[in-house]
Length: 283
Image 1 (spheres, rainbow, N blue to C red):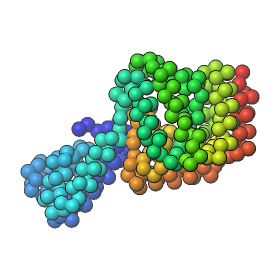
Image 2 (cartoon, one colour):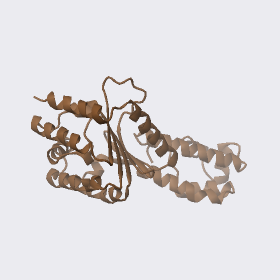
Image 3 (cartoon, helix red, strand yellow):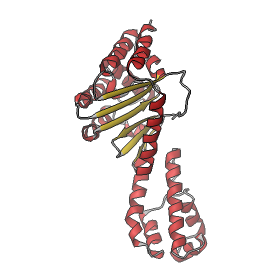
């Protein structure tokens, strides 16, 4: 299996390789060469696996568990590999049939999530988008990737998912960079309507909307958008991929990152003042 271009996947493979190295040593194999001889492998294969270059197969993991006399670790190792495989999904494959399918696929996740935490650096999050803004975003994605044009249907599904936002029994935390307020997706009328919608949503009891000013003294600076669904998973959006993170320690890291950025964001009247300034700046 080739190395993924995603650094997060690469790091996950390296971590898995380190864990296999520890299992190997605990099992009495001091070197990768000794383990490879017992497994009937080349030394280079064991080295590639333990250095995160090659992702091990289930049979490879079974050899580690059996030879190191640690059968109890096998199921967890297999689950880890499956999670790594799920982490990286190419946008072109994900969207090859258009955008409606992936919008619909998220509906069950939205419906079971009780606590949303969302960070967006350059766009308004889907849960807060107006129909016109959503169509504009969808159309630009479709044009860039050259995929079937189902912007109207896909945006309708996205807007339909917003019904969860009206559930007072859920919690929603949104952190936006001020840049997201100023980035144009549609004409001035579309943007004014979108920013006005932000103002209306910001006063809902179940919604916390924070804006990180461009002048903020930065203590945290993630490079990409991420969505935290309860404490179950994080979905990270890259230019060419979507990564799903499920390991509890990594989910906790994103939660901590969100909490730190919330400290430098402005909320309430101050946040609404920034939105109003962005509306007034439209021409």
